[in-house]
Amino acid sequence: MTRAYWEERAERFSREDEGWKAVCSYGMPAFYNRAIDRAQRRALEPWLSPGAGVAALDLGCGVGRWSRELAERGAHVVGVDLSEAMLADARRRTVPSPGVGSCTFLRQDIAELDVAGAPFGFALGVTVLQHLVQPDALRRAIGRLHQHLGPGARAVFLEAAPRRDGRATETGILRVRSEADYVGAFEGAGFAVADVTGVDPPGWKYRALPLLPRLPRPVGTALLAAATWIQVPVESLLGRRLRSASWHKVFVLERR
Image 1 (tube, rainbow, N blue to C red):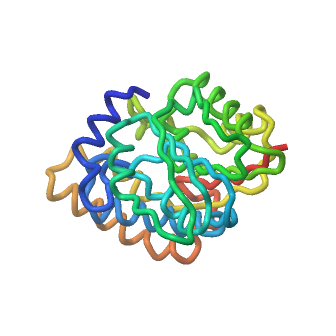
Image 2: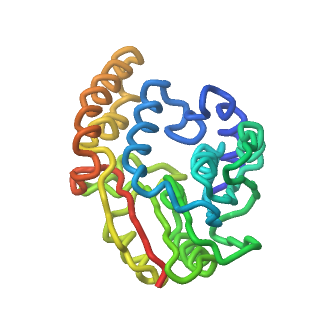
């Protein structure tokens, strides 16, 4: 994962709307990224209240959308990201509010995580580990996180982990791993996997992506819109339950 890539991505898109084009699907239409954001929020809702006053880490925080969410629920959040441009926008969007938690933002590579104030009681990472394309970087990031959490602390990750082969959607900054790969990496670092739930079954909108470059732009956009909106009611009603059919999974971990 190169810093230059994320800096360029942030400089192009982080100030648009909610920053979705920068932190969800790179440069994709607003309707597509809005659907991704909603699916993520539904899937993560049970885990977004770590408790008032809890020290929390937001890994790969981007423009700070999840840092702000956790702070509004009372946590004191340290958001870390590789891109200074992303962090500048996170600071711009974050307005301190009396009586709630706080946000601090730091530039760090999560594979070399070193944040003062440990141990933390909670950590969140949303589509961040999938951008650590090298296995060694993944192992180091999970290991460093384990060292920053206190006993019994919870960590929650939302990552691409489809049941079917997802290599057609991989790029130089995205590695699609299986659920078993992630579970093995988490347990190898000393975490217990307390739960795994679904996010976005049945994954039609992601399977449509490799077709887009081969189609005329209006046709590709129409296909993507159809796949996205057909999937919305399934996600809304059954997203967390249809784990095996989901393209992304939520992994709930406990530090042993």
